[in-house]
Image 1 (cartoon, rainbow, N blue to C red):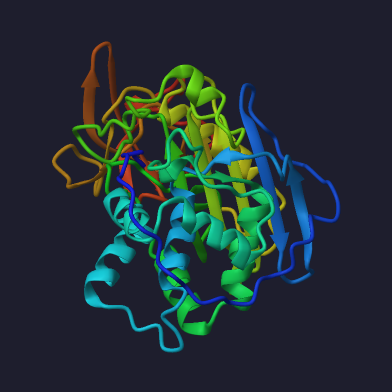
Image 2 (image 1 turned 180 degrees about the vertical axis):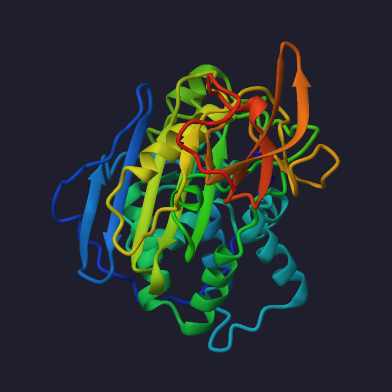
Length: 377
């Protein structure tokens, strides 16, 4: 997501819904494997038992990036009941914002509905305890909203357990239809979406990365030009605004059994593929009730712009491109067209079940042309 500044606008009034319990997580647990150099806030809540299976730095504030789009959406729809009929123009914007993380839509509602006042209202309505508006130095940057793993769980608990049925079905329905490629060209099937089989619903967030993997011409998501280093690192809400951020949030399993919130910061200069892979390993290490992990073996890749194709030939249709250096899940392999990238030549192709296509093994990090331990398709 890009953090484009927007101008101020007056706030709109909204009705009050019943807020959920504001109690803090009742215990501290952590089986998560946090990669070296990564700062993480993690919460996994089992809706069936009403307990947390994972808790790590649950009240540590992170800049929200696009996760705040959940609050922007809820605020805009707050007083639209009881039928929650959504005008066509709004539906187009909201669908794109929730499914494909469209930044223009978020900026539209941020301006229209009062910028930081949106966050103030939603904090009160949902009983959030560690969420706050962007710092006063950057009021137009909705992605600088401070959120925590525990408050992110509260947002989903409101949606699933307390929100009016039409509102819940609309928001969660869009999150279940999350697109692989976001509007800005970033591959957003990381974290929850890569670690677990469907059913899942996700709202992801990213900030301070350049190449996102889903477009031939990368979209750059840089820090705001008017934000000095000092202003960005000493923000009033205590949030780090400089390190690359990558967040995965949502639900997993039948009946949305588990709510998962994994918020992460990565060392300066971390590539999107590296952060994508580190977040994937962290998410796969979690105890998530009701989740099913996909079958296959994970491998690293190299190069950029690597295509995933419909078949095991370079003439087959391109389905998408991979974030540079990302890890991929391989379920089987077969021989296809011979590919040469000096000094390498390889006729084996790997099937990537989460992409529904093939990539040449030449770009997979392995000492042999045929991947060890992987069956033939």
